[in-house]
Length: 130
Ligand SMILES: [Zn+2]
Image 1: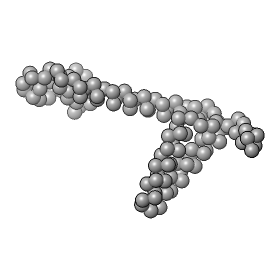
Image 2: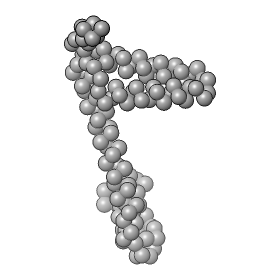
Image 3: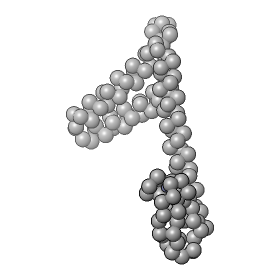
Image 4: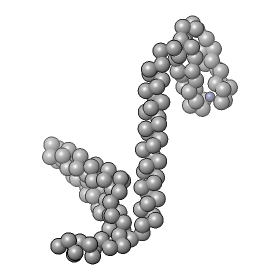
């Protein structure tokens, strides 16, 4: 049995972080499917598990590694953004505003009263109470 599986998996990609995440999403969909019988959700679950098996059995290893690297970069960006939000929430000495023009985050000292803030990136001015 073990030899048979080794023969099948020889030269194939196998599992990685993205594959594991896909399996977790599939499990979540299965559990969700127990409580509500939606054919579209079941179809989505089937697509995800087929994608996971396609990746595991794929012989195009560089392409699968590139997908996993892109997934890891995405996770890293999410983690960095979450860390930055937490850091801004914990900062009691400053207020943070997002520029509506370019999305840049501007930091101003708390308790400065009503001030006009100029975005350092695009120059747009906003008036806020700090
Ligand atoms: Zn701006």
